[in-house]
Image 1 (cartoon, rainbow, N blue to C red):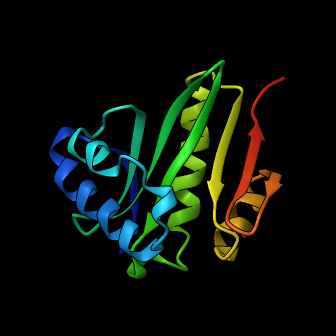
Image 2 (spheres, rainbow, N blue to C red; image 1 turned 60 degrees about the vertical axis):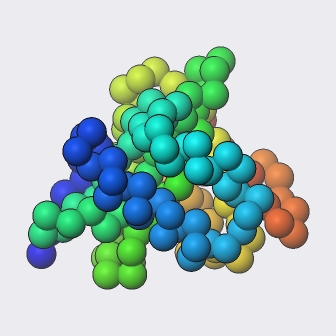
Length: 147
């Protein structure tokens, strides 16, 4: 069954909230979820855009873009349920988010991930993201969209 990548609608908010809460449990990294309850109560809230991966009428993946000011944005909460992993949905979401950032005239996308998420880091590298800093608990990456 084909996966469709599209912008989240207001009607999608409960499904996206459930997906992001599932992501919180899966990731099990409290430092990544400061003020998470407030964030989930107000989706889309501070996000400029949230994209979803939908298959068979069910949202099984999502990613968010947050404006950081100074023509920079942040990729947040990229997550796909097990059913979509290994089928290119994560990459499709990430590529669509990069395109959305370009459309909005951002010059840089930043993201933070965990060192143990090697598949995610590999995907980000494939898309051209470069590691800015790396510690035992965090990897900060960025992608320049324009000079």
